[in-house]
Amino acid sequence: MPRLPKRIACLSTEAAEILYELGEEDRIVGISGFTTRPARARKEKPKISGFSTGKLERILAVEPDLVLGFSDMQGDICRELVKAGIEVHHFNQRSVEGIFAMIETLGRLVGAEARALALVGELEAKVALAIRSAAGLTRRPKVYFEEWNEPLIAGIRWVSELITIAGGNDVFADLASQPSAKGRLIGDPQTVVQRQPDIIIGSWCGKRFQPEQLRIRPGWDSIPAVKAGELHEIKSALILSPGPAAIREGLPQLASIIRRWVEAGPTAG
Image 1: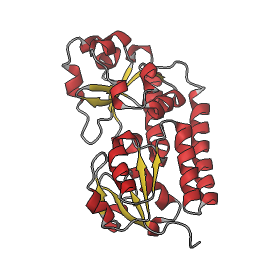
Image 2: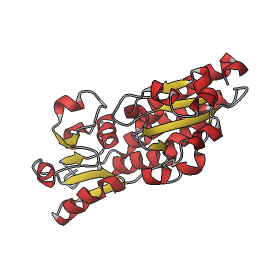
Image 3: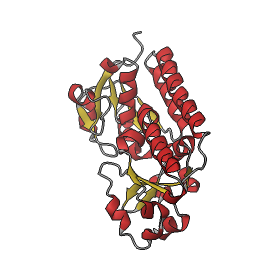
């Protein structure tokens, strides 16, 4: 397959994760410093960028014949790469279906379409299983997913969809379709109080969730989730990267949290 890219630089974590899944890791010549999956990638591949930051010279130094980027936050560096004559494929998946489409597209880019379709089939089966399991729940909790704390940012679309799949109702589903973090800003923290979530999940990208910080926010002691101690963390690497990990690990954690809330009975809400 001489016309396929041989030296791929992955500026997003899920691109590297998927190429390893497809058995095409030998093509990777550089990864994001935020890459955690698979663990061996951090040992095997040079780190050439952050998520929203990257130096053109450092990326060019690995001599890529294809760079894989993601989202508007990597738009500037990808523009520089295009101007430098590098081929770039810029993904922008924001939904569960978008994740599946991204995997299929990446599989075609590297000549591994059959393996990509098999991976998507596996992930689709996990989603279907979660939906069937959630159908048996006797009630659905209201869930607030906090992607960032200063300022407050509600969960992105694929997270909101996974909450629904797991059996919950995202209290900020109205913001989830906004592609940028700015569009999901919660200007007034009292808005969360007004929506009275039964469960709060923190996934502060790049740092540890601190539930005690939520407890002391003015007025938040009246939120059912705070009163019941339903304050949970899902590591950002497991749910905020739009790739297989969000479905394999993020979704089961959401489902477990929701199921435990349901089984605890009405007093937990």
